[in-house]
Image (cartoon, rainbow, N blue to C red; front, top):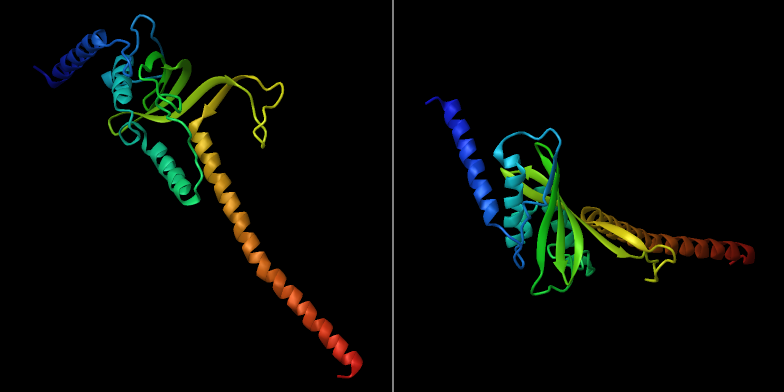
Length: 233
C-alpha cells in the first residue's frame, strides 16, 4: 500500500471517529456541545485536513469548556496580554476583569450550560465560534479562535448584552440603551494603557514639584539680592 493511499485512509478513519464522537455529545450542564442539526458553518479558503473541519473544532470547543482554564485553552497572544494586565492589577490594586469569561458572569449558576451555535470563517489559522451561554440567563458569546501548537485556542472573547452606556460617575446615559458588545482584548489593552497614562502623569507631577520649588527658591534669592543692593547692605 502506498503512503499516499495510507494517509488518505487514515484521514477517512479520523473523520469517521469524529462523526461518531459528535453523535455522542449533547447539551449537558456545564459541558454542553453543539446540536449537530442546528450548527451552521462557513469557511474562507480553509484547508481540507481534519483539524480544520467543523467537527474537529466542535470537539475542541467541547474540551475547552470542560477545562475552562486560561493556560490550557487560550492563545499565546491572549495569555501574554492577560498576564501583563494581571501583573499591573496586582501592583496597582485595581481590577481589570470583574467576571468569569467562561460562564459570562460574576456568579455561577450550578446548572449553567452552553451551546455551540455556529462556526464561521474557518481559515488555515483562524476561525470564529458563536456560543449561547446560559448562566441564569442566555448570553451570546463569540470566540475568536487561532490555530497554533497543533490545535485551536481562544484568542479573544466577545460578549453581547442589553444595556446602557455610563458616564464617568456611573450614571446611565439617556438614549444609550441597546445591544452592547464587550471585546475583552480591547478592554485589557485599554486598561493597560490607562494605568500607564496615569502613572506617567503621576511621575511628571512628582518631577515638576521640585523643579517648581527650585524656581521659587531662585526667585526669592534674586529678590533678596535686589533688596540688598538697593539698601546698600
